[in-house]
Image (cartoon, rainbow, N blue to C red; front, side):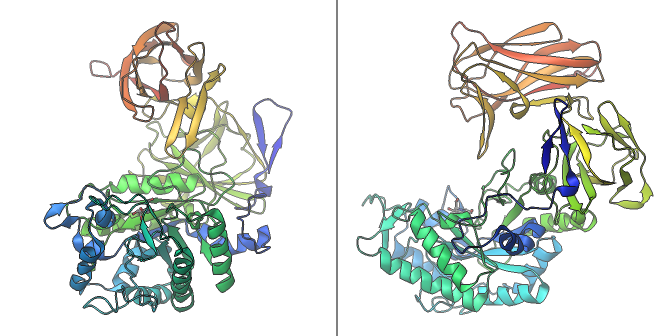
Length: 599
Ligand code: FHN
């Protein structure tokens, strides 16, 4: 519970009363008279889980990104649409689908070893092919392929055996259904997306869909129904709410995502992490490990294990779940590059999992200069998990703004070395934890801070990172003027609407290690714009990079400034009024100039 106090900028965070995950007044529109407590109980395992495996597997996996020898430019699972493949030709893939190397227990073992607590697999993607034995259509993996096996049945049993929650994805949009057709048919190039209902056929399709969903719920018992394709023409919020009520009537414990439309239990940002999280909502970021959901044999653009682990930490620090995708091959194998990364993530979670599972969002409103924070509260005992990406070279890990903790801290230690107590002290800027010279883990090391009772977290100044740099993000800027505003939501995380050249922005930060700094910025500008950047009595005249749009951001080096005295510094950005054109500003960064070296 947050209680205002009489001191400016001081937020008395009574953590003891801060119960995990009970969000006030934002129950999903369940229409089932579910109380917040009942909803919390239903969501409890999902909130505890924090990390799941997404699996996109279907006929498109057999195509592997190629059709008649030509590569598709889009995602693997969109090949039918993007290569404009007529339904009858696409369906011939079924006659080759024979994933003899598929082993459900192996897939579940891979997910479990990675530390994933649930698994969401495509039961029917937009292409309409059903990866389970449905009575509603013969266009399914048992009746329609030489393989004649039901992978979802095998996976649901393997998940139950191994203690992983089994969940299914289902696309409302269906490029194969006779009840749907391309919304704007182009006889020359029959792309399917988006579809619309064939006039008079919507009820038939909904009946078909409910038949399949009832089969999935009653025979495969998914814990989550993950809808998609809700953007097709003619599917309405009310249709989504009616479907949500129907599904929850079949299984009151079922969790449904927001893409059923008009209802749903959690938000589903895709391929990005909301910069501020989605406070007051349950949410899950879904993300590919390369650039495609469904398998493409040529897509080797794999994210590093460091990126994937830090994404998991960042998401958990904002109170979300991470649904990380694998795209198995037509033979039924998860690509080795995915397996390698999952194995490494699993090793990291073996040591650091308690700092992820069942945690809630960071209590700090400002991003920490060295990494992220997750939290657990139990009664009047609070545990902060400090996820350190950038290890302090001087062995002093400052937690900015965490004040008056001396008498409250009951223990401080590394998760990797819990028997070795770490010293703590309170300074004018916050609590300092004395840590060893080297980090236990180069990707992210967890420092545990346990304390009893309320803590005081004050809005601390932005501080130098361990490497001496200073990051000034849009979210921390002070905005001055009539139209300027911070934009967030989706991948947006910038200062925008800079239409008035009288408007300006500044940041206050604290420098403990003075010196020369190369100043850079990340800017999006459709037209030329000039601005002045001033700090420590110096002014740089700068030109924004013309990036072609307000959402195409590029880094640009602006010059060098010298901060010769330690202490608080204000950096301001003012438009040059003559010829001003709006630009969007994501961040400004100061990087120490290395003596005799580059910036
Ligand atoms: O079009 C689909 C896409 O193929 C994939 O399934 C993703 C996963 O969330 N959802 C849709 C795009 O938003």
